[in-house]
Structures are given as C-alpha cells and as structure tokens.
Image (cartoon, rainbow, N blue to C red):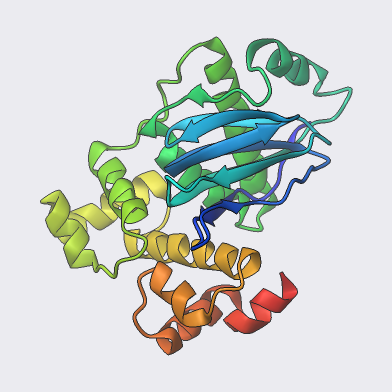
Length: 260
C-alpha cells in the first residue's frame, strides 16, 4: 500500500543577482507540492508553469523538474510530500492520478489546505508508524477529493487559518503569542486550545518549526552568512538564532549546512 515520506516545508528565496532556483532533480517517488506563500515558476520537461500560493501539483517518479523564483518575486514557500506507490497494490491510484490530475499542472486548492498540511507534516515526522500510516491515508483521501472536484472537508477553523496566514506572511519578523492572539482578537488560552485541536501542536511551536524549516532550507541551498539567514526568519541576534536552531535540529547551523 501507499507510503508517504516526510512532509517537508521548503523555501526558495530571491537572491541579490535576481533569480533563485532549485537544481533540476528527480525522485523515485511521486513528489507533491502545495504552495503556501510567494510565487514563482515550475519547470517540467522544458515547459514552464507559473505557480502561486494555493496551487497544488505533482511530478511522477524519475521526472526531472525544478522551481524558480523570478526577479519580480521574492520567495516561494511550499509543502513537499513524497508518496511511494506499489506498482501492483496501488495501480488504481496511479491510474486515477494520471487520468484526473495531469502531472505538473497546478490545481487551485486555495488557502484551505494550509492547516491540513501542517497537521500532515506533524504526523509524518512523528516517528510513530501508526501516525505515519494515518498521514498516508489522509493524503490519499485528499487526492481522491481533488480528483472528484474541490475538497470540502479540510477547512480549519477560520481563526486558525488566519493565524497560519499571519505566521507565513511574517517569517522575517519576530512576534509573540500575545501578538497572535491580539491579531485574532481571541483570548490567549482559548486560541491555544483551538490551534492545538486543528493542527496538533501549540501555535508558537508551529511558528518556530516554520521558521526553523525555512532556515534549514536556506542553510542547505544558499551560502548566505548566518546573520542573514537569521534575519530572514526574524532573529536580530544570530547567536540566539543558532541556539534555537540547535534545539530544533540537534546540531549547530554550520554543522547542518555542511551535512546538507
């Protein structure tokens, strides 16, 4: 049966010379993308497609592709999920995808899946086989809903969606739980309970994971100084950033960059 690998949050940022791109690459699995912020272009077999927040698209195994942030944009932030399908047991799903969701064609899913992917990411990274399998089944259900029309069962609470939008649009800013609750005009303890119910973790834990995931990608895909990476995710002090990054990843930023 199908198996979903880690659902990652990836960032691609514009660099001073004007264009930032991921290298062309391919995987042995299906690679699904859900854009949660920014805009850019996606290349598949020499054909380019514009992509923006709310777009959902995928590539088949062993198909080379890449994403690019053009000079008129500034970043591209997306969830990336890797789905392995058994050629026999999952032939029906593979066939349905080919027939109903063309490879490389962006489908407008809108903002309503941000909370869903945040929860999916938590499940897939848990290390618990049952939760990982739950993530795979949830994702397969989403695919069939998309193939049948527009999904209707993945809306988070409106306040949670606004909180997620606030977090992703302010990656380069420092903000507190009080700032979030005030922005949403909600009592703080109620907001925490509401967010944990829909996403599975506390709001500030999610916000920090968002910032650290983006920082990790910047460390691996750019040679920018640590202070600049820290600033990109809202840390004025690179030493404070390095401490929080080590708590999140288990290693110092410089070590993480060398491994990447």
